Length: 76
Image (spheres, rainbow, N blue to C red):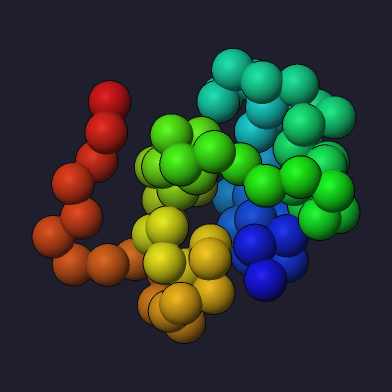
């Protein structure tokens, strides 16, 4: 679920894997590995991805169909 949601979230914002990687200070290959299900982001990276993509971690993990969760605390 994470792989599909991550891909759709960055495409919704018209970001490439390279764009997203630069925003979260990682590599394109790391983002590709997440999207292909070869690896899973650590919790800190998951929060960073959700903040960058303006979606909830629950959405990325497939626990919610809603893109955002009310009263979410954003981590800087």
